[in-house]
Length: 90
Length: 346
Image (cartoon, rainbow over all chains, first blue to last red; front, side, top):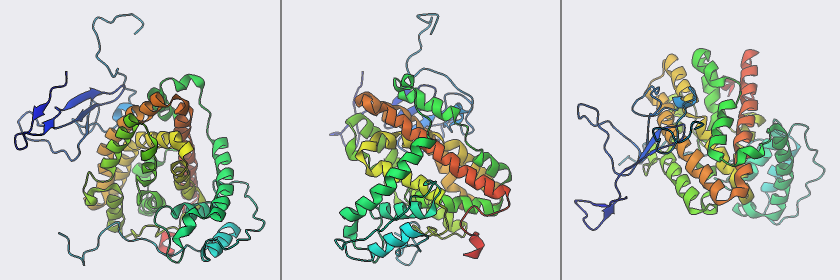
């Protein structure tokens, strides 16, 4: 699935596209070349290569994660959720 | 380019040995002033009943470990690997390790199958003293300053002890550790290095940001926390515990740091002071996720025998932090300083 892109200024270098990973009971981690923009198109400043985006909805610095998911006992799988669920016990 | 005259936070370091505080430190510091290879008569040193809180023992161990970090002026650098010193250190380490074992709840065998999830449960169930909530809502300026001083022996070398794990890990957990550490070390910018951010916070509070500058002010239970980590870091056999320690450290960081930042704002401090805390809210929300699942979970997948020690490292950190927080809160409750002497008398 991973498709490599080419950098404009260095066409000899392959760049992996950004990946977004949901972590179990935690945030989405974004790695790779990405730009975060608000809905008006303004860039949201980032200062690190890997960022965590809120998935529980309760962070006080959305869209970033601030660890609040632990306080509210947020539960979610770290893999694709299928619907309808394959077994009732899941 | 900063001018040479400009002070560079996080670069000053303590150069002399601290004052001895008992038989262990006396004997050790006397020896360290000699040449390695000199025959040392350690004599009969009695092991204290509570190695975790014993200042003499913990300061001796701290200085032994410090030889692997910054060292001391007037102490021959060859002492770092001198067999007679390592023997002395091993005796303290054995007693300390036993005391930490006694303090740390055991892991159940059912917890070993999914280390990431078990770490989440361990952190969620931790009923440690509410230190960060106390400081956020009613901590005084003096108490916040004391808290910073307690943290300084570790924070001024933040991330360094966990870096000992790098050469000892398989590729997946190693990549995860480096992803965390790269960020801890400022992502290639010295001025964003977390230890440097802490030094800046200390300076903005009017505290001394010299590495080791408050070594003579912090009690044994504070040094025990740093020694636990250095011990995990310097012994390859404890690489599991070291990784578990980092995971639990990161998982219990973002929420308390938000509270410490709030406490500083309530006391009227601005960004120069709160930057360190605010940075940790965002950074550690990333780090905790990587550390629990990719680092600790990845290590347990590659080396399943280490699962138990990974969880031990997490639980030992929480247990020791609990004892340390208890010390701070009980001192403050009694209207006393939590340091060896009040800050304003130094």
